[in-house]
Amino acid sequence: MADVIDGKKVAEEVLASVKEEADKLIAETGVTPGIAVVIVGEDPASQVYVNSKSRKAKECGFHSVKHTLAEDTSETDLLALIGTLNEDPAIHGILVQLPLPGHIDSGRVIQTISPDKDVDGFHFINVGKLGTGETSTAFVPCTPAGSMLLVERVRGRDLSGLSAVVVGRSNIVGKPMANLLLAANCTVTIAHSRTKDLPGLCRTADILVAAVGRPEMVKGDWVKPGATVIDVGINRIDAPERGEGKSRLVGDVEFAEAEKVAGAITPVPGGVGPMTIAMLMANTLVSACRRAGKEPPRF
Ligand SMILES: NC(=O)C1=CN([C@@H]2O[C@H](COP(=O)(O)OP(=O)(O)OC[C@H]3O[C@@H](n4cnc5c(N)ncnc54)[C@H](OP(=O)(O)O)[C@@H]3O)[C@@H](O)[C@H]2O)C=CC1
Ligand SMILES: Nc1nc(=O)c2c([nH]1)NC[C@@H]1CN(c3ccc(C(=O)N[C@@H](CCC(=O)O)C(=O)O)cc3)C=[N+]21
Image 1 (cartoon, rainbow, N blue to C red):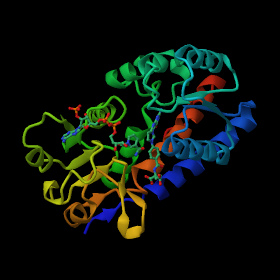
Image 2 (tube, rainbow, N blue to C red; image 1 turned 120 degrees about the horizontal axis):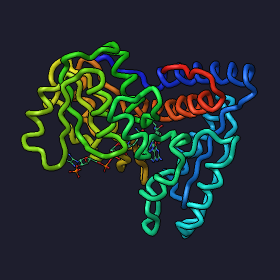
Image 3 (cartoon, helix red, strand yellow; image 1 turned 90 degrees about the horizontal axis):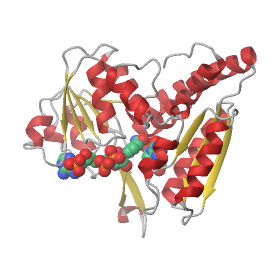
Image 4 (spheres, rainbow, N blue to C red; image 1 turned 60 degrees about the vertical axis):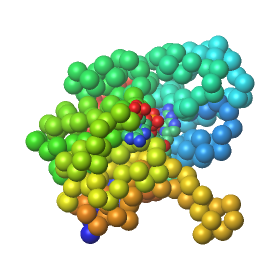
């Protein structure tokens, strides 16, 4: 049976260290890390994540502001708000919750965020820095950064020669994850919806990352014995066994079967999800340190 990687616990450790470093920064420089979270519309699932981000920010001792804009807010108004936050010296991190409503060009919104405050790591400058290995001045996207910390807990920091398969090629998860694994000396393959023989490819992976958005698509017999399995997927499915109208969260990996084969595996919930929020706080702290001219800690 695999070790189940406790992402919630690792996330709490990261948050404790963020808080400690934030206290130091405040005491030494008077700079309080500040984060602004912007959400457009009232999608309940998104509200849950955004509230959880605001709560964790306060627990870390950050200055935290939340802007909830109406579903029909114009792109111009959203861009103007980002402009104001870019100029606000009390704000070191800006996160615009995705997805945005269809009438707003999310690419344009992301590229309007100042790269120095882009704690999601989605701006071209930060994407380019990650791609060229400038990780000491980049912001690395939170979900891949958190996933890497979990991989390192199991395998150590140097992953030389291990074969890694990332299923999914989004700009938010799959591509940056592949870049981080490559930087850690893995031999990386990125799979997607046009990949041939996905089960066979997955069976070659010492490190298997599933970021697909399809409930339990990666089957237990796709997992190489002893592999480290990182399940990024968050899928809400109906759970009539829990009662009428109830739902539950599952990942992109068939956990019950994969657990029998893997060396280590992340659960859903309680795996990558909590790490994402912890890394958002870590990135915001790093941003505040840079602004204060202080060497940021490494997580
Ligand atoms: N834990 C966390 O903090 C976070 C979790 N997530 C979750 O991670 C998952 C992925 O998110 P995201 O990357 O944004 O999703 P996207 O929908 O942007 O990307 C999904 C990727 O999976 C690929 N894919 C889809 N179907 C198949 C298939 N049948 N076989 C192989 N590949 C397939 C797509 O391929 P193609 O490019 O060919 O279409 C695409 O590259 C979702 O469940 C999301 O909720 C996301 C962000 C944070
Ligand atoms: N600009 C932007 N940045 C993001 O990082 C971003 C985003 N937009 N849009 C949505 C996705 C999704 N995402 C999650 C964060 C935490 C959990 C999380 O904490 N999940 C808990 C469960 C929470 C629950 O019970 O619903 C867990 O897995 O244990 C999940 C998903 C960040 N995202």
